[in-house]
Amino acid sequence: MISLEITEKREVELMHMQEPQSIPVNLYKTVDRVMAAAVMPGLEPEDIVVDITADRRLVLHGEPRGSLKDVKETLSVEWSAGPYHREVELSTAVDGTHANVTYGNGVVTVVMPISDQTHSARLTLARVTATHGEHRGHAGHPPM
Image 1 (cartoon, helix red, strand yellow):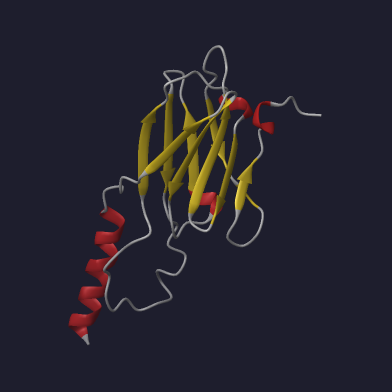
Image 2: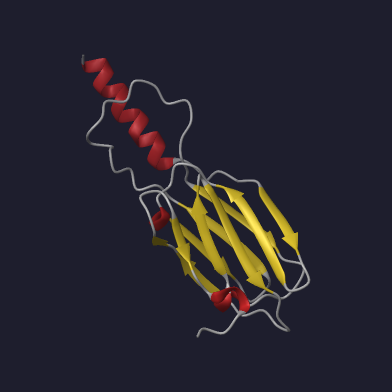
């Protein structure tokens, strides 16, 4: 029983020391918007931060909170839900202050209106349901 406890403690330590996983990102562009979709499974909406920087970079970051770490006994760890981190250079200027971000089924979607110059923003998600979140920036349309 002692070796199982030691193994479990070591696995928990390793999970907390993990380097962020690079995630695949699909980018799309229309006449008036740039859209990004990235797979970030296993997170809560509150675990995700999206940054749009002044130098035209989209930064996606997600770090799970480990809500069950003291409740369950780990028997084997072959994959983990995060942490995730990815930076993508955007080919055009966007307005981060009016961007929309949604999270559902493990996918983060960011919709950014094209702009004359990039407006930076840090976007966090509000929980909509148990597994879905969103940040409404009106997708380029002024708030009513």
